[in-house]
Image (tube, rainbow, N blue to C red; front, side, top):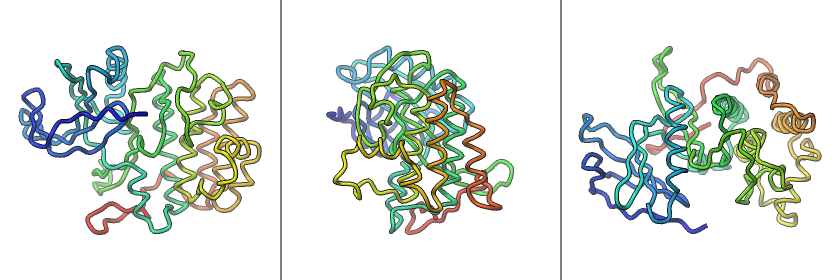
Length: 300
């Protein structure tokens, strides 16, 4: 898909309030800028901007703003502080939420995180998606770019911690909506590719495709198999692909697939129990292990 980049420059002012410091992300429909809010004690925020002529529609924009307002107070999602439309752009002002998961993963020499950190990330992602679904929405675009890692001070321990945040909510839809997949790629689930309507199960499956990558699953090892054939094989027998310390990923995929076959909602407590049981005497709710190297965040 063509990227519809918003061509604003460092130093430009948005809505006579937000001074652009940096362009931090370019998506297919929107560009995200790091800004300083000169009317709010120079607070650093993010502004997600889409072009009026060929970006998201007014309906899509209003839906995203409405959802973000519903998610106020949740640490799993960016916090909205404003929105605007002018002659050229639509924009949403959000809290700064850190770096894309994929960028942090690249900093590890073997392109994988420890099994413990994968479990911690999975537990946080399941909590975030469960919260979103309770609000009546499904994400529909879970991938490496829409999962962020942010540093903050824990309210209880007063220690600096790294936590997960889910962004990219412009494609979110009501759970009751009947929508089919309108994109393809590794994170498109096997169920979507098979022609099924999108459902909350697909958010979880896409999320665990991401977690599989974090655990060291390399898609390029299977060049003789198409992506769709590979996903079919994975869902037919996930333990064929995840049978070592990462076999908990296979169990999670089994749980979600079985719930789908039975016509039931995803069994979130069963997924969480699987994460708890993955390593003896280990708690997936423990803090993510991290350090700073060369002024950059690195997960162990």
